[in-house]
Length: 184
Image (tube, rainbow, N blue to C red; front, side, top):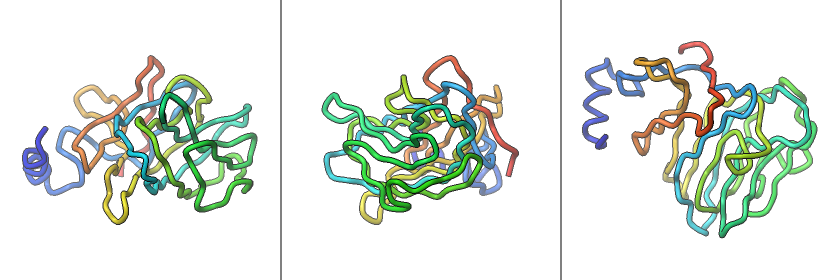
């Protein structure tokens, strides 16, 4: 969908943030192995990413964001209750080693570099994050390059994220579904 067409659809739906085919929700939840790749090729220059999340499980390591870089995978993750980063990622706030209890809401900022951007997993196929993500965005300097809004597609009630910058809808890349929170 072209940017102009998307803006027209938003205007026709009453001026909301999303096109009329989508309904914004408070969060998207993964209860097992649901993950998505927002297909944004990050350059080798670091971008600042931000997200708000709640972790619901405490089994081993769980990545809430990952990138692929030169064939290697890097992520920001929890090891038990401790926030960590690996490889081409670096935590800004809170710092690595910060404890975040199960069920606690956290706003996290980090630097990312790579060629794919995964949400709810390390690399799209492992270290799955079981929890809720309230927002996810990536900035290049002061410019937003990804701005994901939790939502569902009205036609079939498939939950996912709508990227306001690139006018794309992203849902899980495997057979495990996302779950939509309450409508906003």
